[in-house]
Length: 75
Image 1 (cartoon, rainbow, N blue to C red):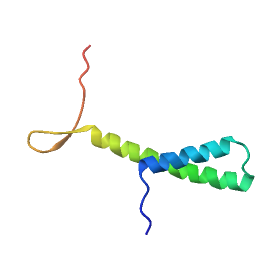
Image 2: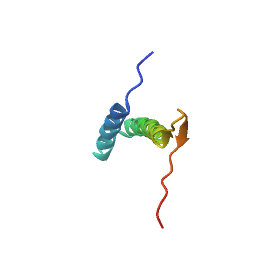
Image 3: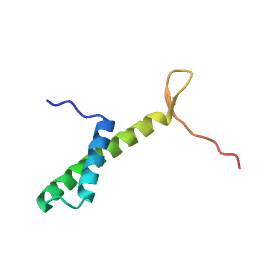
């Protein structure tokens, strides 16, 4: 089984695909395949970002429990 790529590797591959497609010199069938792959990479990156955001928005309380972090704004 292949090792899952890191977020950074997926972003780099996504950027490469976008540049290739923006060149306009890609045959239609290859462009469709590249676009499909790019959408999968974008979805994977978005999922990882949301997961990281959820983890960051939690704090550890004194009793060792995770709690949602909320900032109280002054009015």
